Image 1: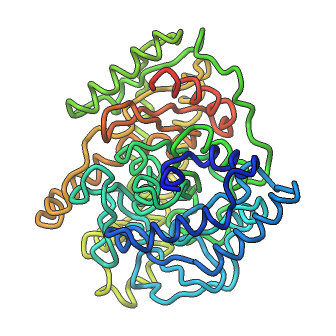
Image 2 (image 1 turned 30 degrees about the horizontal axis):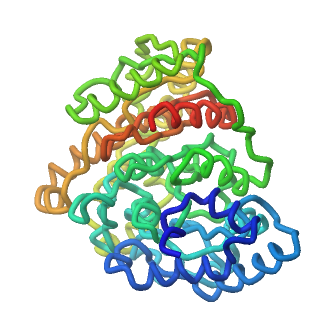
Length: 442
């Protein structure tokens, strides 16, 4: 039974289908692990045992009668606590939403439930999802899988920890500027940033509606592919026969390769070499439009985030962590013309990027240019928090600004991921690339 806590979600699904695992026993094992783990309170905001066991019982009956709804039918999943769960508190890591109880599941949770998955509970996140480090002094700061004194990455911090610590086989997070990929990379997981609108965000607490996406944090590319399928209620991609032979990759010189720390750089270079050994063709490209797009982040992110949250924030600002409050209030100085002009320029940058990268299967870069800082270092030094937060999200934000589909894979070096950026709505092709790359990097 202990092995169940470290198995991939897809392997668990196959074992359920073969009659080797009963979903009821699996759900109970996950709930017991989450209840007894000494760091559970830093990972789960709350468990949903009654719902989990009811769903597991239904999955068990379907498995015994040969009527499973999907390959993940009966597999437990943790959900970031900004995904609405009917009748269960959903606070998005913020005292502004304390005791908020939605009356309906979010659309993505409804879809996953219809596919037979089991809702284990809600995981901690950074406040209103507006930080990439995973620090949340208001609720809890989730532990890093390698060292609980290190930050887990955000904003889907508890999501990554739930999988990394064996308290869930699969987790759902959101990604607005890197919030699936940063914690995935820092905890040696696979993370999929989906294209805007691909997975419905209805019923998820918003940060920036023009960038908010939902995606999985997983133990394997296969898990991510099956999870995408249940989130959107569509068939999973066929991953059989995937190969890197003849595939063309570009390494993004501009911005993404600047000031990368030694460990992430060495891990990235080693990963690229292994992809080349597996048959991939790799070239370097410059993309000045990325630097321009990054310069637009202020009005695009802070402007929209503050516009959405200003009324609630200013009604009760003292309950917020000051540095997150500061991030939101940075949006106050941008005007409507600033916002419109930024979007106009970003659309031009996106067109330039699409033309520049159309001949490549994916663009590569280190997922994060830095290693995770300690919780203490960023709580004791405000400047450290600001600087490390910006660096943590720098490379990942490129994918959001370009509305790319992006996959981060572990490189084999702790805390270090490699990102594969593909065109919008290119998830199925990207996941085929990903499973071949995963094999090369293993």
